[in-house]
Length: 217
Image (cartoon, rainbow, N blue to C red; front, side, top):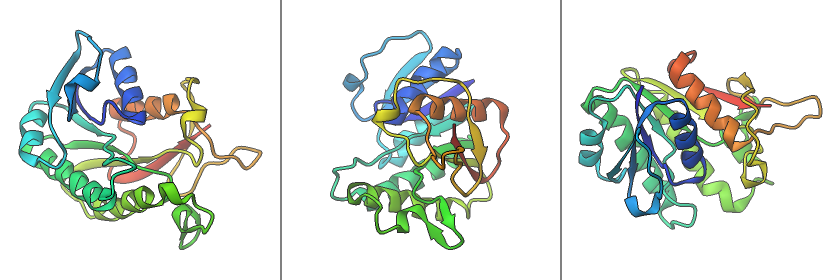
């Protein structure tokens, strides 16, 4: 496949890039600073672009089979919430303008439902340093669910998917929809490597359409 990847230098995006290239897909990585991606591969093309510049996205998206978005406006960005929503909306609109029907978005686990009407991000113990980003991803999902023209998918990883889970690629995972997937010990956990596996599997097999799904071991 010919894939566009946004966020290729980020925590999730870098693993999506590794996984996509390992499957011999052609990847166009859109990065704000190409110098930050020190990787040379025959199937990799680097394009300078910014999610806040929709014109650059439209040009880069044309001729591709799908867009994988691991967009992050920056955890320490004081304008994180607004920039994430604007950038995500630009990516969504650019898909339509460029004629790319398939959009796969990596969102957070904060919008998963712990009980009817209560999402993870609403828990008073939710880490403050992640809250604004989680709320932005949660609110973007609300907007994405209004999208009827694109064949979109929103992937929420398990509740525990952080640098401490890195280094494990099993190639296996269990899936759910809007509630966290727990194991027998009531733990919802997955590595970033297997999160990447799940999104690339979805890009290839297309099991989900205009819906959110989640994955965990």
